[in-house]
Image (cartoon, rainbow, N blue to C red; front, side, top):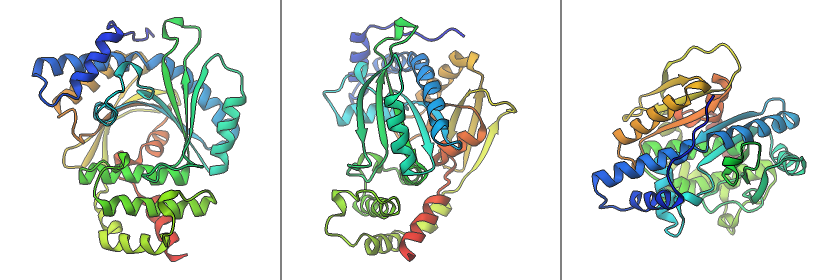
Length: 341
């Protein structure tokens, strides 16, 4: 299949990023900036594909049940990050293209990270972010490896791809944060939102870290995390609210093979259903055009949820993106076990 290349210069891409965070940008300027952003995002497809194949191979060598997928960063996430880091340039953002591996245990995460870095590859490891030894202030845990593509298609050399490695417990926590963000119109994922919800997820993160026997994080210093988790879970009515968020997936899908396809996931405005549209790898151009159209139809800096991902099966899709199905079953089980244990 022909792989996308952007026709815009780095200067134009940087300018587009600045327009996207301008509150008073004109409609025409904003439309142009979204077109540029979409073109630049689509151009990440080949480097992402190359790193996805590498990650999938290494992950199953560590864990037969590993789930590996890729995603193109959502416009609201791109815009939000540019606003949080005003000096950042869109042309230099390192996680527009990302791949994710979910493995069984935290030990598997650490082994996979070491395995990837020890294996020979043309691609260059740019930076490692170990959020297991040093969790984010939000409570997020996992390991991120940022690579620069350096392969056969030299026109993509220097493009960044972020590899996210998570255990099943870490993944349950992270996707439940996204569920609450979506249905309560917050940004807890970026440490922005009501204090009670932020503290609830920090305490949950610390209790989950105890299960994995890893550092709790500075936010847990001097706190009875178990008691605080129980108090906040009751105060916020967490279990009842998470159950109420559950949605059903309505999809346009026919899939009987294990080939990687693209899926456009769109959560309805009232959160009552998920529309899943499937595209073959050869239909990438159609998929990215539909993705951009959906983003333009919504307020591009709102919590509106539409994302383009690639996965080899429906099981992988639902395992990697349970937030789009409001599936917090595993999180609730772990939380209740921590409180009662």
